[in-house]
Amino acid sequence: LAKTTQPVSMDSYEGQEVNITCSHNNIATNDYITWYQQFPSQGPRFIIQGYKTKVTNEVASLFIPADRKSSTLSLPRVSLSDTAVYYCLVGDMNDMRFGAGTRLTVKP
Amino acid sequence: GAGVSQSPSNKVTEKGKDVELRCDPISGHTALYWYRQSLGQGLEFLIYFQGNSAPDKSGLPSDRFSAERTGGSVSTLTIQRTQQEDSAVYLCASSPDHYGYTFGSGTRLTVV
Image 1 (spheres, each protein chain N blue to C red):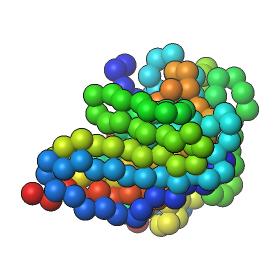
Image 2 (cartoon, rainbow over the protein chains, first blue to last red):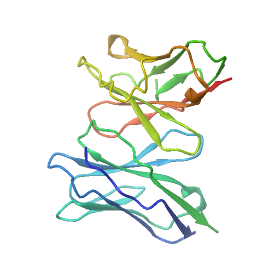
Image 3 (cartoon, rainbow over the protein chains, first blue to last red):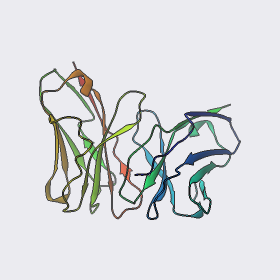
C-alpha cells in the first residue's frame, strides 16, 4: 500500500485556483490515484481518479507526472462551499485506505 | 435505491451493550467498505467485502467487532460490549466495479 503525504491544511480565497499536491513515492505499477472530498457531518464524496497524465471532469483536474510519484488536484475558481477535507488515496481500484487529508478553508 | 443507505442514523447505547449497524449498498455493487471516523479525525478502515471473496478484516480494532454481508448485498457491523472509545461515526461505502466509491451518510454511535 503506497503511503501518501499531503499538506495538513491550506487557505484560499474565493475565485482562486487551488492546487493540492499529494506525494506517493512508492506507488506501484497497478495503483490508481483517487481524490475524495468530505464536508463536516457527511461521508466522503468521490471527486476524480486517474492513472497517468491529466484527467479533467466538471469538478476538478488531476495532474500526474510521468514518474507518478506525486499528483496534484486542481480546483478552479473555488467558492466558500469548497471548504472541506480533501483526501488523496493511492492503491489498486479496491484499496481504500484514507490518510489524514488536507483541510481546505476558502475565505471570502 | 439511489444511494448507500445506513441505519440507524444515530444510536445512543449504554456501555456494555451490543449494537448492530446496517448498510444497504447500491444494488449491484460488489465491493463494500466499513470505516469509522472519530470527531475531527480521518477515516479508519475497518473491513472490506468484495463479491464472494473472504473479507479483509485487518482493520477491525478488536474481537468485539465483527461484520457480515449476506447474499452479497446488505452488510451488518456488530459491536459487542460497547465501550466509550467506540463512539464515532461509522461509514459504509460501496462500488460496482472498482471505480469510485459512494458513501452513506453514516451512523453516529454514542456510548454513554
